[in-house]
Length: 187
Image (cartoon, rainbow, N blue to C red):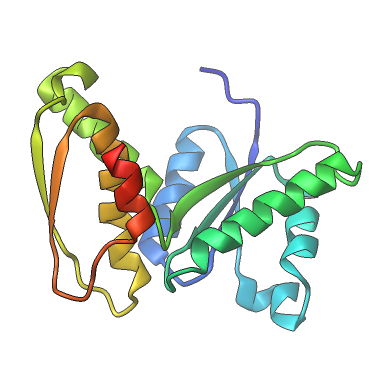
């Protein structure tokens, strides 16, 4: 596999020392250099729009990784807004290239965790085809934010059901998953 990018910008909206360290370390192992955008210290804190910041960052990087998982309805929407901003910047000739936007975790999904779990299960059971019909039980993980505990089970349910895994989630009453995620998993 050949990686064509060298700069990787991570935006962690809320302080996650372990996560930002682990992503920086993994990026280094891949030969990538990282830059961490702290929105509290950026122009966003002074009124710059997401569109302006996304385009300015895009001049300096080829990959933008975003983690925004604290509040329901905000993290995923923020990532969509960043993606649309860099699409428009590229289409309108402002940006020389369109950077990749990667969801490191949002209020709806935690794709990097779900993919890591899929890799583990695939290795454990001997292949993707061996997952069909398996049952997986998950338990709820408490967090003071409502969004964070949703993203991991929703990511697992959305991904693993595509491979025929029957996923059951034990959670407290009142902490149901987002209906659109459950509908997608039923398909």
